[in-house]
Each structure stands twice: as C-alpha cells, then as structure tokens.
Length: 265
Image (cartoon, rainbow, N blue to C red; front, top):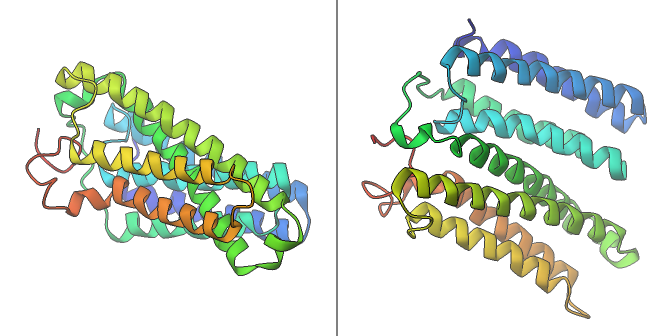
C-alpha cells in the first residue's frame, strides 16, 4: 500500500522526466520529448492510482488531493499543445507550473484519510472534480500562452495564428468547465436536494465561467484589441484561482459553504 509520505519519490521521478521532455522539445528532439513526458505522466498517475486504492476512494477530498490532479493534468495539457502546435516553450512552462503545485504538496501536506463525508460519496463527485481539474489545467496552459504573447508583442502584430491557437485552448477549457458545472449540479441535487443554491463556491464558479465567456465573445468583435483580450484572459484566470482555493479564506465561506473541503460535514 502506498502512503502520502512516498509522494515525493514519485514526484521527483515525474518532474525529472518532464524536465527531460521539456529540454528535448527545445532541442527539437520530438520523439524524446513525447517519450519522456508520457513516461513521467505514467509515473505520476501510478501514484494517484495507488492512493486511490489505498484510500479506498478517489483522492479528491482535500485541496492537496486536487492539487495532485492539477499537477498531473498540466504536463498532459502541455504535451497535447506541443503535439498540436509544436511550441518549444510549452513543456518547460507546464513542467514549472506543475512543480510549483507539487512543492506545495510536499512542504504543506494535508491530512489524507479514508474518511469521506456523506455528501462526497455521490457518484457525481469524482467526475465533477476530475473534469474541473482538467479544465483548470487547460486554462492554466492558455494563461501561460497569454503571458508569452504579452511579452512577445511582435507575435500579436505579425500574424494571428498564436491567438487562434489560444482561442482553441480556451474553447476546450471552457467546454470542460461547463461539463464540470453540469456534473456539479447533478451532484448537488443528489447530495443537498437542489441543483444550484448560490453557495459562495457556486457564485465564484459562475463568475469565472462568465469571465471566460467575455473573452470568447470579445474575440469575435471585429477590430477588437488583442492585447485587451489577453488581459481579460489573465483576469479570468485570477478569478479561477479564487474559485478553486481562494474561496477557502473568505469569511463568507466559513461556516456556510458546503464546498470548503476542510469543513466538517
């Protein structure tokens, strides 16, 4: 049986493999980039799977457990973007961002136990969180691309293909976010008897969803300003972070939000 104390060893192996993949991408060694990144993903997911078996439930209850999935989905989204558009830098940035969340889990581990509050025992809970983490990872990679384009301003004026690629990422991320919200509504109906109650977490989820819709619709306006669109995307990602973990620190959520995992049921 695997325990949380062993996470660091799996994480080190995975990050080293992802780093090799990122280096290979820069050196245009495509086969090595794919192979190393995919093996690293396999190593990391093996820990998630063993934790699942050890806990006898999906590792999705605590913030640390959701960070586990986010750290996995970031390089996954990175390798998908690399395979589609061959951006040399994307694997470096996705690996670096995944490393940040891995380090948080190493230096600030949270309690991981088999105990699962009744509301989280719904069959809709696991797909809701997993799909949301995938959406967050895809939109995280989109944010990295937005920052890159803001720094490399010449790419915005020379041709529009980077923006088109960015739009595609946002579409995919927003689609997964929408599916995650639908799963969440089904989960809420089963657990609490209603699809939506404007709980603080749900309110911020709606704000985040509408923020990304603003980006999508603004990009369709003729003669819009690409730089402003990128800033809308960055603001949307800040709202996403607020929805994901920032809500835990809001006074409005303490004692009232059913979505704060650390709270007793």
